Length: 468
Image (cartoon, rainbow, N blue to C red; front, side, top):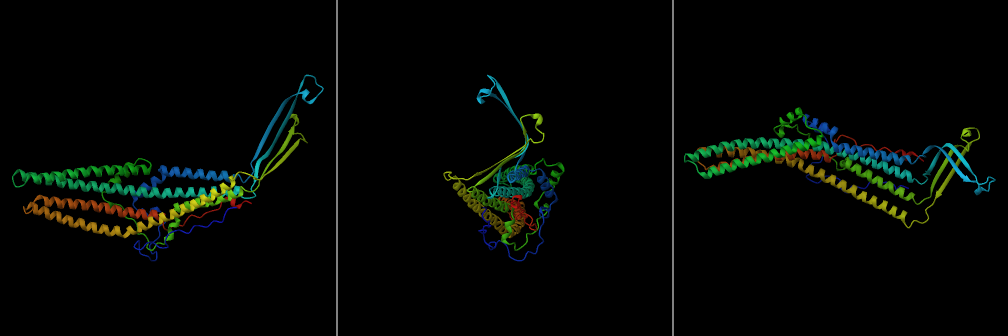
């Protein structure tokens, strides 16, 4: 009764958008697992701890186990339930009811029985139970893939949180250095104003620049603490002292081991191996299976109740020869009139399948966009970082020249202050750009579904598919 399943054609282009990356043969070595991509030892340690202790992963695992148990429940309905029974029935009867000779008396009837039996076992001629079991199996697979998707998300989130901490720590150190320079500049400008060679305007400008650096220092200190809080939450336990010491030694994003280059010419159909897409397809398969169960409801149901054992009106003779007893009670139920309930259930199953088709296509489109965006940023971020570093070098030369001209009495302090602010802004911009470039690598790795060298998980068949 289950309709033949056809995977929907992905509503995306066969190739990535132009400019998203050069096409060609994949020459780079394929990456097998996350450790091959996240090469920094400290990052590997944090990710490993998160995979053991993260609470979102624990929740996802229990949800998967619950889905597995639900499949076992549905699959068990394919088999009869055999129960052992033992019972006694003692009844007091008035003799007059049966017109017995006894006068104004009563007598007792006794019945004892021991045996085993099957109660209301449904013979699955039309595949209703098998359809429900198969749907439950597909939902279990979807839950397992959701756990894998959560695992991939946790790995990427830990790496991103660590990069955020390092970037904010680098910004704190840069701001502290700028603040020290502005302290010295403020003292120098104030000294020149005191001896009459400077102006109070220069003093006010130097003081404002100093307070601006102090404000930024508090901002980046707060953001660094928040990044550590996020990292601690993802790891699922307090950061150990040796780990924290190793983290504090990373004073720059350059101290973090770089990520390997993404292979060129990745095919667009590679996103079909993402856990969220595979999970969405399994949910779609389950909706297709539900149609089979809804169709089978229109056909007769055959239920069998049977028992076998011994029975006697005297418990002492219960197990003697000749006390055997059995009964079989088959029942056929054919729906004749239900006010359109079964038809509505079938329409509902078809509507839910169409809903899951749209959701599957939406998942594919979203994945395509994520990969295309990450590929578009792959080279542009590198070019942007090169330009930003050149800006830092030029701004540094500008600041040094402006400071020398001020100290030589050629220019007012405002020229030096402007150059210093330009250099500080360029340094912070370089940190932000480098963080974005490294985060984009993580995004691309996650968008492609993890290790590029891994094969998609095989889909085994449930037990229900092998039962007549």
